[in-house]
Image (cartoon, rainbow, N blue to C red):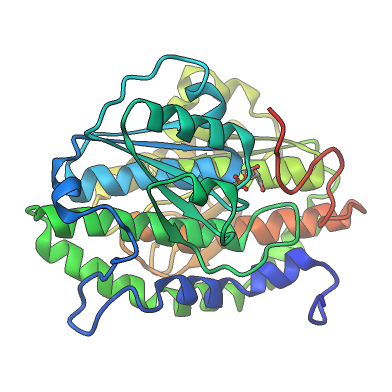
Length: 369
Ligand code: F6R
């Protein structure tokens, strides 16, 4: 049942190109527009939405953080994203014009379920992004966009995360399409890029051997830090979460711009720091900033592990280890940048002798509060 792999997690990492393609299947029509009829919230209602609020836990929350960048950029609708466990215990401001998006692989996470119940009580529409047919969260939502990752057995989420990202992009682009924004041309281009992205994920998977070797060489380390900016920031958080839960190591993700506000004090000689570098094309300010961040940490002794687009030469002098990913539009980069971090955590944990399918203290779905 593990399909020849030692662990479900390895199998599920390898299944990502298919999971991504399956989640897109039938949702982009021949003219290159989105056909999301299954989102049973009318175009009229979607045009009325004045705020999007995303609730989720763990890895699904990281997908939500990335969705915020996409939704605000492509639709200009204000978007908040909050941990479901925080959201449900405060008094959030919602009404009938708020669209609440609940993201959950299992569809059974108690905090996410309670958050969506709270939202519906306020009269908001709830759209679930979920991987499990007929589970509680989609049943209690107004609409659902299923991710088609197939069953995810390993406790650590991998393929479900990539498909959650795809679903979030689809929702963001669909909102943009329904409402008509000035980004019409960009939206069409991104829909085209999305339809090719599963091949790019496949290409990343083919180049992972050096990442595995690097992970094994770091198995004795105590701490690994992860830095990113923009959508690379939630990717950094996800890389750190994978390493914590699988390798039981101290791993932390930071927004690179926050370094000088505290975290840079953590840097010690030869401490591995993984940096997710945004594309040098497009928003080049972001790229330049992160190149200076890499220089800053390296000057303080960090061992830099740099994840950068093919053709990005500016990072080469400052990278102790360089992991290449294919060029993608900035907002889509998490689909390719996360994969090396999953492989890294899985291999490092295995080298430490851990069972990556059943990490200690964790359950696949958290149905208690
Ligand atoms: C991390 C992980 C968890 C889940 C979280 C939410 O690898 O798997 O953080 O993402 O418990 O679970 P779902 O998506 O089922 O609501």
